[in-house]
Image (cartoon, rainbow, N blue to C red):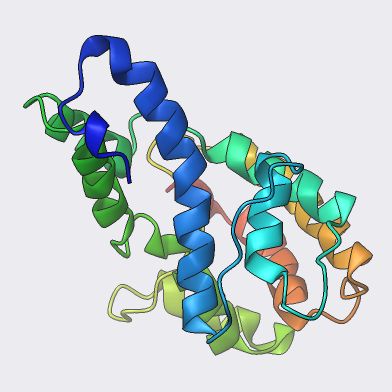
Length: 213
């Protein structure tokens, strides 16, 4: 916490942004550690941004966490692909709050609150829940039919984007990154959710019903 930056001036913008970017992974890691009842770990100045985040997430009192370069590379890609991605809900919320002259910390808080919504940050979680509900590749046709049924509340999550009408270019990068990580963790061939997702994507991308939408 930097009380000296509560009354910020234009000259402080860059320093405020740097400090905020540095603090967010620390806060996120501490929140995670609290949720699993483990002690907090402070940043290590010998590590870079992504390495530090992984260290704070997974280090334990008895074991020094060794950063896996494949995992680090994947997380770096995720950070880059999601950084200020056009005029999405959280970016718009931050800009609206900042237009009133609100403190940068307060503005970012509004963006985080917006990200909480199921139609924004919660969309990724909804995809995982959907894949778990499908359960097996053999049930994919059943759920494709449910998605097409106007009287059925089921929706195919993870398909369609307000900006990318054909295909989200980030998805292609993240798809390969996911495979690299699962291969490194030796879970590529026995990850049932991934197999359902791959087969579901192959069907949906060829189905005129979903293409038109």
